Length: 580
Image (cartoon, rainbow, N blue to C red; front, side, top):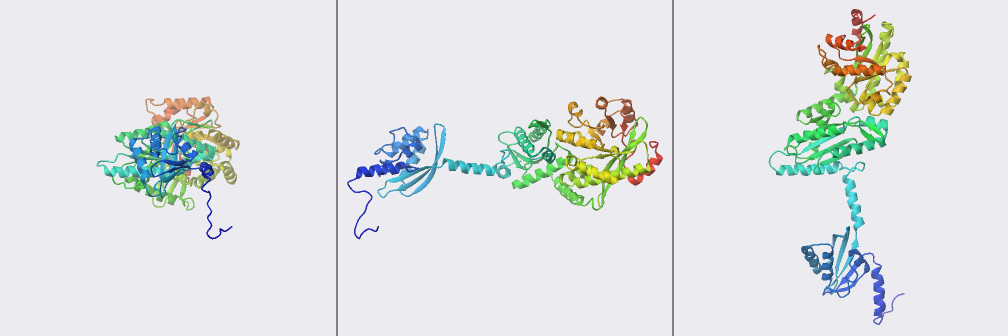
């Protein structure tokens, strides 16, 4: 309804001040913010209960007519604020323009954040509202935390790590002398195999456990971060002595040599570590991490659990390795891979029992490349499945030809190395079945060589796979025995036929009998479990004599024959005494 011309309508009439006060109090107390109205003489004109509750004033502290500055002093004294803080707060009361500010207060152990809105009145007093923004602050802080931390491990993520590293680099340029920091790039060895075989839940728990182990190796002033996947990084600050960096690397290796218990399972893992030492040439954090990453790849090339410190030659090496990977992608299609065959001899009868198939890469420019140089690259870049399948097929095809040309009794056998990732692939058994069917090879003459570490990564799954292979009547040998982590209790569970003594133990044998204790122990252990024993790397007559005296059943090495391409086998077999 419109007002008629000249009429005045106000909410309150001049004679109903009591009603006005009552309504005003109801309105004030239903406002969610704390509110206070102060006159030009700093006297409180009005306030609501939320104002008292926000600041937890004792009843009677805030009163109409009381000087607001006294109330502020009582509040500052109650929360232990300084005189300087109080004076600054009181100066804000004199501002004659609107403003907003945030402040934090802790009372009785509870910390709250408030937004103050200050609105001057025409009479030079002011109205202030106090909004509790604690939950909003927590939400923002949580959002910032989440943006800078890995959700799985709770460690700093790549963004936070790079930011801290950049601060350290910038600070190092302000100080004369050698920058005293170091960056570790850490990559878990065989994580994909563990994750694929044991499942992502175990894989996630393993990442958390490794993160904790790594955090135990550094000081509170240092930083450990998860960069993503199975990659971690560490920033060591204030490195006084270069030896400290090496000590940390050794500490990491020692911590991770012991198995980790994950959901009731013992899981073996290790990390390859690349280290970049602070240098004046570094301007950006990306440069330091890149060089640590390059050093890590050098460490992987040396074997699991190794570490390397970056030097400038490594950059050229990594570029060379990248070119090698590119060439390796088409090696099978271009028929550049070859199999060489090394004879295995029965030491009791001096007869040939079979061969071990050893892959070589006949690179068109680099010549013959040995497996230690390219098989790790194939595993790392997902090429091992194609190469491994080719090796199995070619070895079985070659075995069938040898058996037909030399129909010995028992039939000649073929030992074939299986890589970690091949052994963990789900279709290994089915693929091998197809190859055996296609080539017509008797499964009993095919031997798959696997390593201890391969089995120990996932004992239950490994044993199940081995049982499936044994049910096919394929033989299983543990290669490089004595260099892994298996124990007697586990060894009894493995459905294997033989142990192969690692060549490093055979090489240490001397003519007077030194260094034979480990070989003696392995042979004794094998006999107790009814396993055969094959010694690798037999190169000298005294080594042969010693392993024969220790009753080792089979031998393989340069003393008998070097690995040979298939065309050379005919000539060798016709000329040697080892054939029937």
